[in-house]
Amino acid sequence: MHWGRPAPRVRRGDVRAALLALLHEGPRNGYQMIQDIEERSGGVWRPSPGSVYPALQQLEDEGLVAGDETGGSRTYRLSDGARAQAARHADEAPWEEVARSVPADQHELAVLWSQLNEAFAHLVRTASDRQVEEAKKLIGKTRRAVFQILAED
Image (cartoon, rainbow, N blue to C red; front, side, top):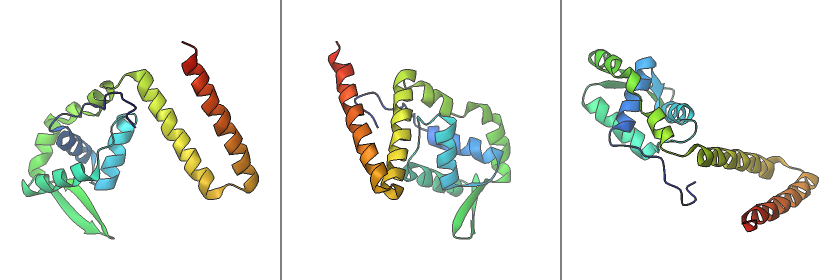
């Protein structure tokens, strides 16, 4: 969600640094690393699989990471040679800097929107007819209230 606000600033090499920092803590699969980065950045940065998996492949090609297939999932771990290198840079994990690149008030609004979206998805899957009607009324009131806020200036 961008709403015309600047996207989080992710610098070249941030994905690689984040992956190495996470793997320094212990083995993980790619999906777990994406979730961990999102959680540690406070929801500001969720790298795409299209950036994470090629970075993991490059780290593997360089001999810094080894991947093991288990139960249909590939788990990655640092190679012995990479452990010392990752330890030297463990405190430099970029998620905090990326999180600081987004103004706090806009980030909070984005988090609330994400939480509302999650609730809405759950509602669509599980709500009774009565719950759907109540939700429609609430969403209509909320929409009108947001426009009222915008009209106040």
